[in-house]
Length: 487
Image (cartoon, rainbow, N blue to C red; front, side, top):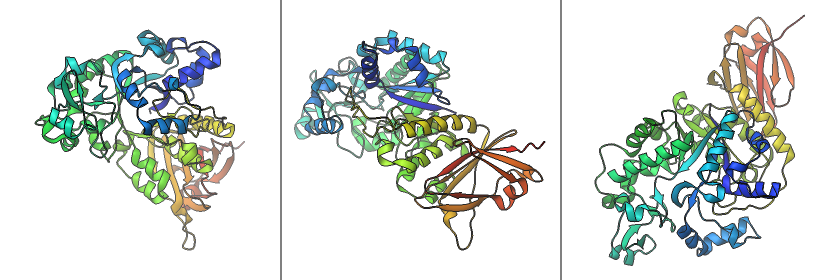
C-alpha cells in the first residue's frame, strides 16, 4: 500500500546547503540523506514545489500585508530573501533552476529508484500564474472577462497583454490574487492538460493534483456559470486521465479533494484521494464518529489518503500534542489506503511555514516522538498486508468505555495482526472478539510491535468472549498474534 513522504523541497534544499556548507540542489543530495528519507515502509516521495515559481506572483505576494503578516508569524526573523512566491503559482512546468533544473530532478529520481522509492510531483489544474505563457499563447484555455468586469470587480479580474482574465478561485472563497483561472470546459485546456501531465509523467512516477474537485463539471459550472461556456458531455478527469495513461500506464494519480467528493473522483480515475473527513474526525470528533467513517466500503477506503498533517494543515504536534497525536498516528498508519507523512512531522515540528517561504524557523527535535515514529513505521509496514477487517469492541452494562476504542485486524495466510487505539482522554476497557475461529484449542503469543511487550492468551478466550484490553487515555497496541511454541 502506498506510503507517501511529503518534502517541502525548497526549504529542504536550503537546510541541506547549510548543513553541508555548500549549495545543494536535487542532483547534489548526498546518499546518506536519501537513506534518511527512505524510512521503513515509505515507498513514495512527494517533492512538493519543484516547478518554476512566478516572478509576477512573487511581486503580488510582497505587496500583500495579510500574507506578509503570516510570514512574520511563522518566521520572526523574516527577510525579503526568504519569500520566493507560491509553488502553486506556477509560471512553467519546468524544474526551477534554484533546485538544479530537470537534470537535478532526474538525478534525484534515480537516487529514489535505487532505494525502491517512487517520486510524485504537483500539478495545479485550476489556475496558472499571471505570467504563464498560456495567457498570450493559449487564451482560449482561460476564463476571460471584459473591461467592465475589471472596473466593477478589480479583485476578481486582472488585465494582462490587452486581455482581461478572471482570477483563480473556488466557489466558497474570494479569488486568489496571484493566479489566473483556467477553463475546465475548454477543449484546448483539456488537450494542454494531457500534454503537461504526460511531460510530468516523463519525469516522475505519480502526480498530486491540487484541488482536483474544482475541475469536475458540476463544481466548475457552479463556480463559473455562463463564463465557462457549455459543459462538455464528458467530465474533465475522465477525459484527461485515460489519455495520460495511454503514455504512462502506471502513473499514480493522487487528488487533493474536499467536500465529500472523494468517491466521485475515484470513479473518475484517481488512485487515491485525500481523506479530509477522517482528519477532521480524528482532530475534533469522538471514536463513534471515526468508527462510522471506517464503515465505508473497503474498495473506497483503499482509494483514500490518510494523514494528520500536510503542508495545508497545522502541524500535528501543535494540534494533536503528546499522546493524542500518537494515537491518531497509530490509526492512520494501520488503516487501508494510502498514508501521507509530512517532513518534520516525525521530529515534532510545531510551526507550519507558509509555502511562499524558502526558510523555516529552527526547532529542537522531539527525540521521544522521533523514536515513536521510527517504531510505528516499522510496525505499520509489517501489519498492512492481506485482509483488513474492522472490529466492534464490547463492554459491560456498568462500563461503556469500550465505545472509545477503535480496533481492526489484518490477516495474511498465517500472519495475523490486531490494532486497538483508545481515542479518548480517559481510560477504557473492552473485550475484542477476534475473527479467527481456528484459534480455538491452542495458546497464542501476542507481541506489541511498538513496545516489544508480550502477552500469552488462550485461543478460546480470544474468540469468545474476546481479548480483554485496558488502555489509558490515547494509548494503543499494534499486536502480532502467533501460536505459542511450547517445548
